[in-house]
Every structure is written in C-alpha cells, then in structure tokens.
Length: 403
Image 1 (tube, rainbow, N blue to C red):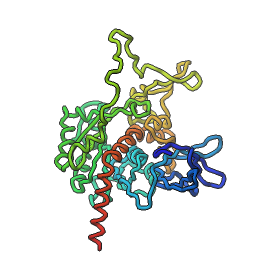
Image 2 (cartoon, helix red, strand yellow):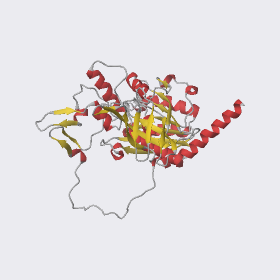
Image 3 (cartoon, rainbow, N blue to C red):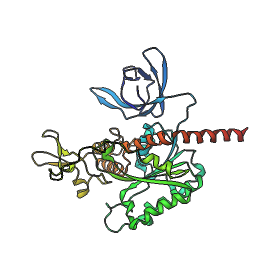
Image 4 (cartoon, rainbow, N blue to C red):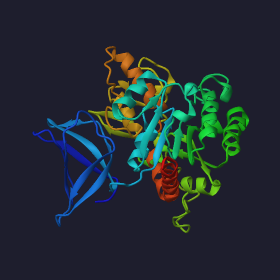
C-alpha cells in the first residue's frame, strides 16, 4: 500500500475503527473524535506486521447508519523515526497544518488569534500547544521546528477590500513585521509564507519587496510562485502567492516551488482560427433536482451568512424555476479541500447565522489544503534529508550539553 493512500475507515459495533486495504486490515482502540499523528499496524499477506504512520484522519461521517471517516496512510514508521516539525503562525483553521500533516510532517505549535478558529484548531489538534496574539509571543516559547509557516493577514493588501489599500502599514497585514522579528530571533531552516496575489502589486510592489528584503536580511535565500487551487484537484479559482525562504541560499527555496520542466514540447498547437475556448466559469454542471453550479467556482472570500452583495453572488446554486441559493458552509469546506464539517465548532453556537458567518469567514481566509499538501511533499522530497540531518545534529548537541 502506497504512502498517503486515502482509505475509508468505519466504526465497528465493538467500538473500533477498522480500515480495509488491498494488503492489510488495520485496527486501533476507539477514540472520541478525530485521530492525529497515530500509527497503525499493517498485517501483510505473508503475516508480517509493519507499523505505518497515519498522517491524517477526518471528522467522522455517516453512511447508511455506519460511522465512517477518511484516513491517510503515511510511510512505514520506526520507533525512533524523525519527523519534520512545523510551527504554524496565523494558523486559521489549519489549512497549512492539515496539508503538511498529510505530507508526513508534524505540527508542534500553532498561533491563532480568532477564538472561532482557535476552537477548530483545538478540536483537531488538542495536544498541540497554542498561542493567540503573535505580538505577545516570546521567541523562546516556540518549540524547535524545521518549518515555520504562516499566511499572514491579507485584509490590507487584498483587492477585495473596497477603497485604498493600507498594505503592510495596515493593522492586520502589518503583523508580518512581528512575524519577521520572531524569524530573526530563531532563524528556522525554512520559512513558508502565503498571501493573496495582490501582495505583488500592493503599493506598486513595494510591500512585496519589503517581505523579500526582510527574509534576505535575516539570511534566507528566497523564491516565490503564484499557485492556483484549481490545478490541485479542487474546482475553485484561487490564486495565492507562496514565498519560501531557506537558509543556505535560494536554490533550496526554488527547488521546493519549481519542478523540472516536463511535457511534450512538440504537442499539437491550437488552431489560430479555431473556436474560442469556453471559460470554465461559463460552464454549469448538475441536474434539475439538485441544482446547477459553475464548473469552476470563483475565489471564496471571507463573508457573512446574511451578506447579499456581489462577493457570494458569483458562487451560487441555481434551479430551473429561477430560484438561487448561496453555497453552504459544507460546500465551501469542500472547495477548500477540507473534510466535511471541519469547521463545526466544539463550543455550540445557537444562532445559525452567527455560526454560518464564522464558518464562511474561516473558509474564505484558509489556505487550500491540497496546495499545502503539495508544498509539504515538495519540502519532504527536496529538503527532507537536509532538514532531518539538522534536526539530528541539534539533538546530538543538546545531548552533549546535558551530559
């Protein structure tokens, strides 16, 4: 069975979660809620048992009265195996964390100010230490981690904001400076940032230059690339700029974001006089009973449940009789690649509009999980040996100091 295989786990009458694959049967004790960073024993056809790491397990869902969930099987585990560790800043509802976890990494610390998002993080990562206000974080309080990742607030640089953009001078996006100070104090091997593509043009590009200079002045080689979620398996047009900073020069950073060029250069070119391509936004899919939606959704924004403006009206479900409705919070979760009901909070919110608004906002601000997973796998593939060697050397130095 390949690493990161997606499996369906079901809950038996005896209270165990069981998953069946082509090579094995897996069981583990019943738990209350989703599992994280657990291992399972794989019984192979020849009777041998191999321990595998479970890199992710989604919230349970119901199928014909049987409780089920999706699970992601990681590589074979060893008792003393090393894992690339992640400190997650501006964590939101855990888009980076979940994607990196599916790539085989481990979240060891999170920072998130908004109470609703912190509730979601607590629900899915109950054992991970967490801070709230980045302005009050002491660098020494952050545990050792090879990766520092964060999508710092975009409100002041986003084109979705009406009127002039404050850029990095704004109260929200300006929190980048606090993040940069922490980076300078601890200098983690790799830093990964995410923001709206409009960061590239904010204040005629000066704000983006400030971000790059801040990393370069702290010793990082930097690479950046705009990635669109539509090319990572989810039907949403969502362009975001990802910035990777790496100690040791820009080549390491670039190796994460850019693949070797591939494909058939001699592939047939389009006819210049042929039919014009149809925009995916103009194509609808569905049926009269369940409704029709655009084949490709427009970018999701943080919005409220009662809003009637143009932001949500671009994404809607329509019916033959002329009725339309907005997407549900569950549908927005799926458009971001999260498991179903990921944003249902542990603390009950009685007012439906208040609950839906919080879920819409959280999904609209999140990092698309499949994009984060791709980035995580690139880090593991290109920088994994270097990062784990640094981790091992650090452990040996600490052992020597204590002896």
